[in-house]
Image 1 (cartoon, one colour):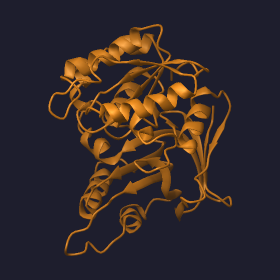
Image 2 (tube, rainbow, N blue to C red):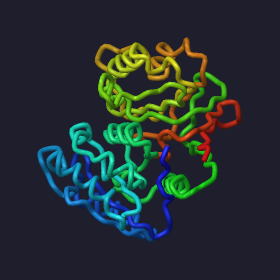
Image 3 (cartoon, rainbow, N blue to C red):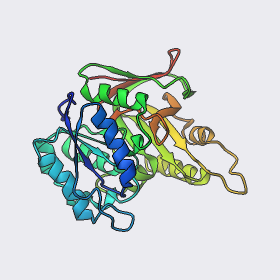
Length: 305
């Protein structure tokens, strides 16, 4: 495991767009949130490019990431947004360069493909957390404060959900293990590739957005049949945003789907955790040991640093 240097006040943050492009007006608003807090921002060359839905060609988007890791003036790298296309740049990443120049790399959604690939191939701890699109409408105190605390602290960090986002305890218990996960669709997409996620012994978290209930059920069944849940120590379901049903109702909620697929697992399982596409986005360090506690008055996830 390679931990990147902690984020320091007034650090220089590089912005990349590994997937889809982001509106300039949204970028401007989000950048101002970081600059108002004293951070210096460097924009990657492909961020303003447009190649259909992508922020430039795969090689251009990958070059931005490689360049940011190689640039000693850049302290951390944050993705502008997700969308689609991160999996297309994986062959162009310089993993040796990334490994020898460790620094914070953070994003979520489609960026899951990069987080799991980078961490498994280099050992670098990456971060599933806020992107610029998180702040396109301005600051969200919970997200920014927890992000700074997680990225800058050398002590344990306890993640609790805001009072207006109650966590559902589907199976109670405590468990510890390395934290792995991300967007469910992307984790399923990587099955059968060299970047397939090894979940053995982990606290696994998943989240998603805009899926039909039947599609969520299909992915959960696929994950189970592929062995993704076989040896995990705990399961965290993040916010499942804008899930859809058909004219003929599927007949099960997302929690019911989870329990239908995972009820045989003797592990703690929670849902509605603040990670993913919702308003609240905790910063989750990939591969770092954590402790999941569902037996206290309010469920917590403690990052064990």
